[in-house]
Image (cartoon, rainbow, N blue to C red; front, top):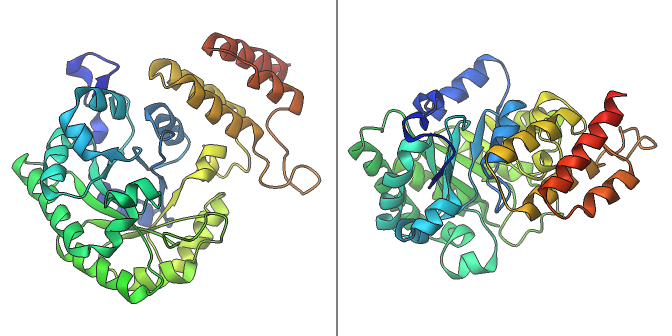
Length: 343
């Protein structure tokens, strides 16, 4: 695990907040809980800090492979960054062993608000290793991992402060999904996130809200939905239709980190905040470029002709961004665009 500040300053006050309290706060505000999905490569610290500044209540790390994390200091430094300004964070694990999740929980729990088991990643490499969506066919194993993680939290004296959750996809036969959820919640899962697609459903296909609703209706613990949340209107509409207590966005937040603030397009301030965070918590240059291209080039609402706002910067300016060779070039580009917007 890498750090940005001195050791004695690494634990932010947010670590004392149990994520379950956030559900209560959101309910009192008559809205769903707003969360940022775990995204391979992209939900690193700088991005999590950015979306938290624009209305996200709870963030997820990218999936961390527990076995490698437990055994390799290099993996720990690469996969998880500590910061005194970290937002409320759930560490998501790619794991298929109670022993491995117990060890990883012991390492991570002091620095995060909860541990999450990935039962939704559809990628073939993950499923071949009995990770991700492959676990949807092994409810007893997942239940044993939930119990192991809960036991580790108890050993650390953190069982009242931290949560253990599970992120799932649905089966074609939803009776299997309901049975899965009942078994893992009986083992101690604190909340469940439901991605309304099967492992084989392409992301281009609409999320199945009816499936999420049915599963949520048979779940005793708080639930969140994941899939196709691109605007604040989507978040509230989907929460109402499915009856979940929280919503999770992935691609929508990549394009517009301020979507939960009701912004229909990424505001320039979000670009500035992201750049400030990246300087303090660096990520690979290619990832910086991907984030910026998503933020300044998204036009999901169809441009001014389609009733939207158009992209944040013009085509010519996006082309200038794409030829940047390093962070100095990008900082110069941001400065030039800022000057034009101020004028």
